[in-house]
Structures are given as structure tokens and as C-alpha cells.
Image (tube, rainbow, N blue to C red):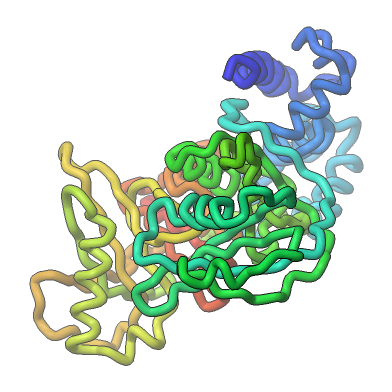
Length: 440
């Protein structure tokens, strides 16, 4: 823990220096002396915290500042370039064209916005990105009616049956079957009698060929809360701010054993380099309509979701099969790979609002548990991403962007729509922020 705290402290100093001197000549030698660390350590730690090299990060921060001035001011392009750290207006034009495929004038007149916010450096976990070759493995499925702790049950039963097992053990959530949840184990050593596992709820599926991929990895103690926090950080905080995106392929975790018991887990998130930069668009009213429900107190997520499902099952069962766009308003997503609802604070009471997209022509049968929600503002800022980041963090990014670009945003009307048509592991996310006064 001490190493993480120390790294956060000096990284915060580095990031603060970059932000205060963004127009100056910033290089690794200078930053390593400011942080009192070696060049190699700075490079590794900066990449671990941000998912960017130092040069890439400085490049994107300068461009973000310049594009905000291009969009919202009447400054001459040469003045913007020199004021944001570029050697000439030609250098700025090349950067805009290379990143967005637009000239500065085309960008100014478009409804597209580029924004790369500054990082805080408050890393919860060290993250490593590397190409890894997964070995040949045997896949076995473990089923149980209890979801919490299913991964440890699967591993412990396996190790109890094979106490002398010396291979590696990987795992991931599987597909639920009936009322039973599934956890998949992947074993590098297969010369064992798997029939011993049948009485414990295991099924054997021999299909796990070697493959290479790029992964973001982090190692944590084997504790349910710590593991969930690490996955949430890796997927919802680190990934959206990095230069990578989730491939949609299954993620996994490797069990590190001590005395034949799992005491640590190494998390693997498959990545590819992101070629599209984060863009925020200003659009007209999209004319969206949702059927949604609100719940308060404990288990508000489950309760609000269940209200909508029960209502649709009774009155509009076909919508459940058709609608794959999930509405969420206010709060923080708890398990981004599994859930689509959220919780927030409303006059000191936990509450949750969630729903599904419907056609505006549908007139709902009266029911006090649900309501129809329409988009009503004339203009909306829309943040689009394939990485489902932390809800509160994305809201903060949108509001910071609006402030920097002199847009009067309505924070109380912000909501997100998660498109699940490509599956829960490949979500397309849009966050909508209503605009009170359009920028001139």
C-alpha cells in the first residue's frame, strides 16, 4: 500500500507540473528530476497510471486546450497555436488534421467536440499493459445457486480434489443455466481424472487453444470487495482515460496460490489500441422515449429494474425482447460489467432510476410504478464511448468540458443510455447532457 501512496504523491506532482507548464518544453529528463525518480521508473509509472506515454499525454492535453479556443473564441489561429505550446499555426493545423481528420476551420464549424481532460494521478491499482500468450488449457464449468464467492468455491473444490495440482489456474464468469450460476476454470495441466469433479457440480469442456493478445493486468489480494474494486477501477476508471479500448473478448483472472489456497488474483482485461479519440457532439433533441421506474433505499437497483420488467411482462412483453437500450439517470455504477442500474443521493435517501427505450408512439397503460420519460431540451451534449466508464466520472468529464467551452449545461438532466445489442461485454455508451443555452 505504501508504494501505491508514494507513487500517487509523486505522480500528482508530475501531473500538476504538466498542467501548469503545458506550453513549455516538457521532457522526460525534466519530469524525472521533479519527481526524484529515474527516467525508466517515471515512464513505467506514468503509463501504469494513465495508459499513455508522457509525450502522448502532453500532446493530447495541448490539443484539447487549443481546440477549445478554436471552437469557442475569435482568437487568430497563430495566437492559439503559440499560446498552447505549438511552434507555429502550421504545426497546430497538422495536429488537428492528424487527430480529427479536419482542418481547424472545419472543426470550428462542426458539431463535434474533442476533449481530453487532465488526470488526477489518484491510482488505485498499478496496471501493466503487455502482449501475453495464453497456454493450452482445459476448460471446466462449475455451477452453483450462490453467486457471491462462486469463484473461490470452484477453485477450493478443485484443489481439494487434486491437492498436488501444480499447473496454473485461470477463471471467469460463465453463462447462467437455469437457477445455477456458472464459473469457468481453465487449467494448464490436464493429465488428471476429471470424473472426480462430477459430484461437485462440474462439467468438462475441452476447448481452450493457445492464443496471444494484449492485456491490461493488475494483481490484488483475494478478497471479494478488493477484487470488485480493482475490476471497477481497471474497466471504469483506467481504461476510458487510456489509449486503449476493450476488445469485447472474455476477460479472466488467474489464481495465485499459497499453501494450496488462492491468496491473490491477477486480473486480465483484453485490449486493443483505440484509434478514435473521445468526441463530444452537440445535437438537436434526439426525440428519445423511455419507460422507467424509481426506487429508494436498500437494493434500489434491483427494485427499480424489477418494477420495469414486471410492468412490461404484464402489459408489453414484446418490448422486453426488442428493446436493448437501457436508461440510467444519476449516480454511480457499481459493477460495470454486470449491471446497468445505478444509485445516487436524493435528499439523503439512496435512489435508483432505470428503464428501457420505447417508441414515443406507445401510450402506456396507467401504472403508478412506472413513468414515461422524454427528452425535452432543444440541445444535448452527447458523450459516446465503447468503454463503459464510471458514471460519476463521465458526468464530471462532461460538466468540465461544458465549463471549459462556455456551455451552460443542466447537470440535473444528465442521463446515460447503454446499448446492449452487441452483448453486455461490448456495450456502446451514450451520455446525454441537456444544454440550457446553446453556445454562439
